[in-house]
Every structure is written in C-alpha cells, then in structure tokens.
Image 1 (tube, rainbow, N blue to C red):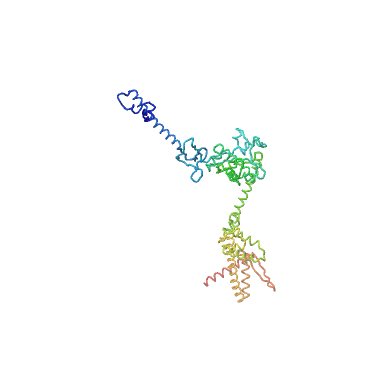
Image 2: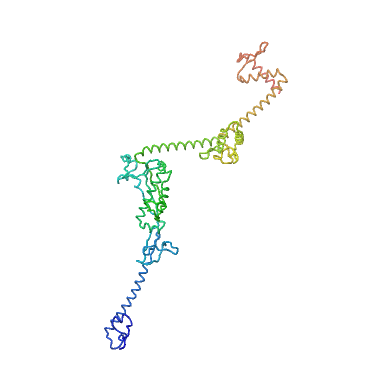
Length: 468
C-alpha cells in the first residue's frame, strides 16, 4: 500500500488535513476551511509576536549611563573586560550589553560626597544645648569633666585634649575596585568615616594643641593623606579591610577646633595676652620703620624685620675692633655715603662686610633727619668759614691801620670798643689818668657838659655840611 504523503507543515498536520484534502474542491466543508484560515492567521501572528519579543528581550540589554555616573557590566558575576584584560568602565551615554540573566549592570555615582564628623571628636550635647554657644555652655556648668563613653576628643602631641568638627569630601575614583570591594554607598560612607577618624587620631598626636586651635597647622591635610593610604590598601587597617576600596578622600575641612570647656576661660586669657603681645610687637615694628625712615630716609628704612642697608652697615662698623682693617673700609664707605647722601653697596662689599643675609646691592638715598642735619652742618660750616674770612680781612685792614699810626689806631679802637660795649644811647666820658694812663669812664655826666658837647658836635656837623 503506498505511503501517505508527508504533512506540508505543522499547521496542516495539527488540523489533520492533508494537502490533497486542503485543495479547494467543491467537496470541502466550509467550516473546516474557515478553521484552517483562522489557524493560519493565528500562527502567523504568533511568529511575529515571538520575533518582536525576542528583539525586545535583546534590546533590554541597552542601558543608559547618566552624566554624573560610571557603570560596569557583570557577566555571571564577573566584570566584563576589554581587549587588554582590564575591566571596562562605561561613561555617560547609551551602551549595549547582554540582557539578564546573562549580564547585569552596576551604576556608580562619580560626584563628590560629603561626610560630616560633628560628633566623633566633640562633647555630647543635648538638643537644647546644640543651640547654645560655647560661652553659654561654659557658664551653665557644661564645663565639667569629660565622659570618655559619651564625649569625643582628640589628644594632641603635648597630651592636651582638643575638640574638633570636620567636613570630609570623597569620591569614587576607581570604579572596578569599588564594585569589587565595596559596592554599597552606605558602606562606602562608613569606610571613609572610619578611615578619616583613625587618620585624625594619628595626625593630632604629632601636633601641639595650640597649633591646632590657632590653625597654624591644618590637621585635615595630614589626615587626608593618611586616610587615602588606608583606603587604597597601601596602609592596612581595619577600616579599609587592607584592600583598595576605590574610594579617595578629596578634602578634609576643619569646621571648628576648640579647647575643652573646662579650660576655655584660661585659654582665652592666654590668647588675649598673646594678641596683646603681637599687637605691641607690630606697633613697635611700625614705629621702628617710621623712626628709621624718618631718621635716614630710604637708606635706613628696614625691609620687613631686617635692618635697612645704612643701619646694617653701621651695625657692622660698631661690631668691628678698632684695629681691624675692615673697620676702616666700612668707615670709608659710611663717610662717602654721608658726604654724598647716597649709599652705594656692591655685591662684593656686601659679601666682604658680612651683610649678605640682610642687604641687597644697590644705591640708596640718605634722607630724613640725617640729611637735614648734614645740610644744616654744611650751612653752618659755610657761614663759619665766611665769617672767619671776613675777620681775617678785617684783621689785615686793622693791622695796616695800626702800622700807619699806632696812637691814632689805639684811640679809635678804644672808642669803637666803648661804643660797642655801651651802645649809642648811653652817654659817657673817657679819661686817661696817671703815668699808667689808666682809663676812667664817666657815664651819664653833668647835663650842662652834655649840652656843651652836643652843641660842639652840631657845630662840627654844620661846618662839615658847609664844606661839602
């Protein structure tokens, strides 16, 4: 018996209708034909739906990474690597991967995050006390002894206790290492907090309390370096689990650093005394600069806390022994400077006189009171010389007059001396008596004698006027 023909497709086989039977003939049942057409359409739609579902499933592997994110792909729990065998990190944008369960994605934020250490090294406060200032807390009796079980603090290098509040910024720098060893943002925050706290304790133990309180030493910078060594695994610690966490601290800001409330008042007194001392030193330094500048001008003006070139040279001169040849050289430079009111120092002079650490080479003008004093001295010198020259000329004239007639010179000289002594307003008579020709002066003589003398003087003057 011949074999039955093979079904053309699954649809025909399922319907139990052969190709020959399916051929349109007048003997086909209309109901069977309708069923065939319906099943054919249904199975065509099923094929399209399966294709669409497959495409949708594959498309579910496409993922987007935000602007402030990075992502890695995990295939069966392992990081997807690039051609070089390194974990592949995906930046912002659209990326393709295999859908789950073949693959999963882990997104990691790349922005900086902040952790505040406001209680780790601070004394315990109630809600009401948080709104109070340190002065109010101290005045209300909060300055009692610390409770190590409740109050936080740091021990400085001089065994003093300080309290501090800090703000820590960190970010995820190595995404693959972060995914391998951390993988959770809350856990990352705990790791950073613990690493920084441990670093703070170590850093504070190497610095004196006053340097921390005054801000002369920034504890945050030292703590940041130590914390990063711990988080990177370079310095094993319990906080970072001795592995590279991929986390990096980018900054540690000291918000507040104070002494315990129990010593607050004493510390403030010391600070006020130090501030007064610093103010007094600054005022004295300003007075020093002003005084030296006023005394010697630019050549004497100090540069910062260093002496001015003129003062430095004078100090060097005073420090040399009298028999030291260098003293004569320094004195020569000073003498030339005061004569010209210009101090010129070369590099060789500065090296030879031992002024290298304080003075730079150059030409410096000498002004101020020193220049004024020198100018006055020069004026007085000129006036004195001119006066001496006039006296010398007058002496030569007097000597010539004496040589011509000694007796007449003596009479005129005595008369001039008397007039110079008594002045023109005093009337007097002069007499020479005895063998020694002793001089007698009669001041304010008899009025009649004075009148006669005046009449005689007027007569002489009239005669002189008539002769002219």
